[in-house]
Image 1: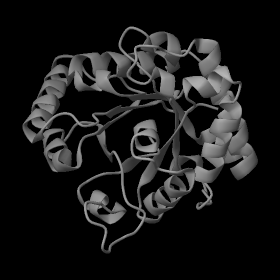
Image 2 (image 1 turned 60 degrees about the horizontal axis):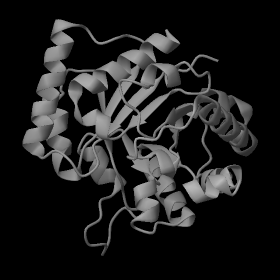
Image 3 (image 1 turned 180 degrees about the vertical axis):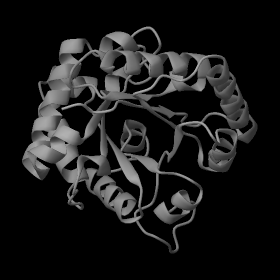
Image 4 (image 1 turned 90 degrees about the vertical axis):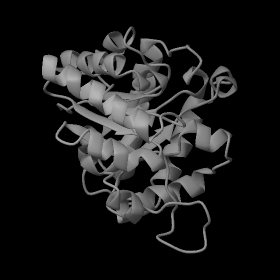
Length: 259
């Protein structure tokens, strides 16, 4: 099964509207001097306030727009929240759900994340569902139990008709922003396990088509080796996505490995 790789940049709490425009301008300049590689999808997830600036700045470029979070209700008395409809209106096609920072800093439960995944699909967005274990959980031999529970509960509210309706991202918590990167056998094992669970939950056809990204201190230096793994369908990139030139190298590595 050939799956077109996807490389999505998660800007987290970085880049103002001016910064988003500058990023897009630099990325555009690079694309004009050297065309972007074929055979890879590219996306960025700015802050809510920079969504329109990124959409306008990257207009005409093959760059998908995503958001970093959403609320599970379409409207109501939920101060500070943003709905799927609002994100889609701002130009988003994807939304990150269940990132470890949402789980561990903001206390989001598997059940709440499942409601957000369902809201994203109901609202016409493609959820990028993040799963991953902590260092303590890995050392205790609980990696598979943890990510299976996160995956099953995250998908509990949807019945996907195709693998194109969702994206998974395996992000071991101990590797996010720490400089540590999971070793290739660890990544391949986790991704293969997730695909097997997805097949059991939704059917083998959907599991074969769904992209499973790796995230966790991905950068221009290690992307090529990780991209060559058969079960890695691209990356969810954190801090390294803030540098347009470095991000482009990660995109090129993903395209070259699967080309």
